[in-house]
Length: 452
Image 1 (cartoon, helix red, strand yellow):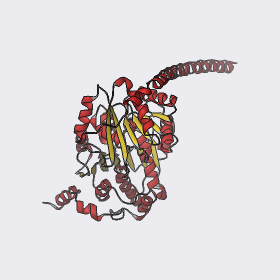
Image 2 (image 1 turned 45 degrees about the vertical axis):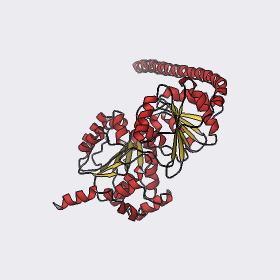
Image 3 (image 1 turned 90 degrees about the vertical axis):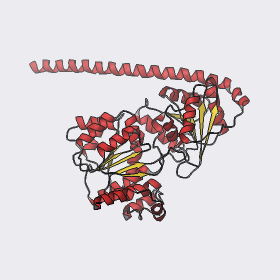
């Protein structure tokens, strides 16, 4: 066997328990002192399993496939090697991180800036829902690290003059399975065509799907696989329950649980933007501090909701699956699956919002008469039967009248919001038309003046 092949064979054996036992600090992994200090300031005392597996390999200059469950410290596993390489060879437009959602992009940017604050690292977030002109100006300043969603990045590559990634040294695809599930394949292909082949690539994913394997073959050279969890599992300290309920009383059961577990902070997952908004209005009408987060909100409002919840100004965050992956909100005590996820793997990501970093947490999944098969698939995937959450049916039924009144008001408010949105859009169209007419008139007057 050639020396290079021996190295590759040795590199792929990254799952040795002995290595994990020996390595107690970031310094042991080969991380430079200035970055070890940054980890310390962030409260990262000991590297996580995926960091122990991936960082030494990445520092050797190898491509990495990282497979780890949500909340396992993946961002640190790719950010530290990139920042260390940037310290050794400073360069603008050094690294690109692709991510599936806007919120995750902002979170990754925060971590890069926190870790690289002492070395002056500059990052730019390129996502939809934000003015392209201000993004073009940020790109013109040539930051060290770009964190982007694929669609908006392709938009800039095609339309922003002077912007290219020909000097790029690192490409990271975070939550690769989700990027591909959201049908960003075409955009990812376009990006891969315009960046240098001579680069380091890190691919991080919670699951190894067929699409991810295909992407791995296309984008990575002789990669080292760092897997810290090959089967789908939830954290040991997470207490998981279900409640079996008639569909028409779902709202009443939700209010009952929020009352029973009052004093905790909740993330409630709904399947659609409309249901997220409706349920948030319903809960507000009943006196709960609830706030929505979904894809039909403007980017500023989405970040506002997230920040209010993170700052504990609101105790209930209602969200679609836009918030199920990667978001690190330390104090979530209870996750409620108000609408059961249609993909069983999404269940793992949703409940992974609680019981993070060694803390305990609860999850409760609502199962109606229409959800039995989906629920059985989830139990099969995680390999355990979930217990029923203890309920007092009579107490739930006592809430139905108040809940029905709140439902009625929420429906009216939802209708009003829809009408306001429509009239705003109509006004925008009228304004554009008026500006067009004004410009024509002004243009005509100018011409006349010139004629005189």
